[in-house]
Image (cartoon, rainbow, N blue to C red; front, side, top):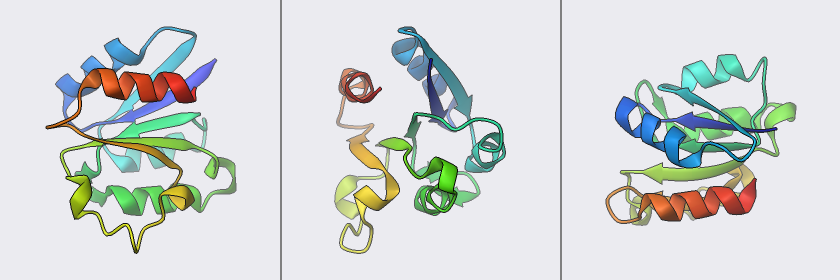
Length: 123
């Protein structure tokens, strides 16, 4: 079974993601904060994380660096689906590959179908 963590502070969006990305022998687990995910990593390492970068109490990139610091979670794939515009990210300072980022979508521009295709192609 494939495990996907969804990190989305908006409960309605998290529910929609679970609806769209569920099935196909997948276990989806939703979290509203990065701190909850860090605790969950002690029990379960996901195959993929779908996440918002603008998280309450934590910067999404800080969270990604933290999970990459754990040997068990270094191979976790990450799909960003965020209100943060990709053009504002200092990619010269942040290496996508080091953080496991395989796709980046902007909520205001990209469709949920694009997100679903990226997830389907990687799990």
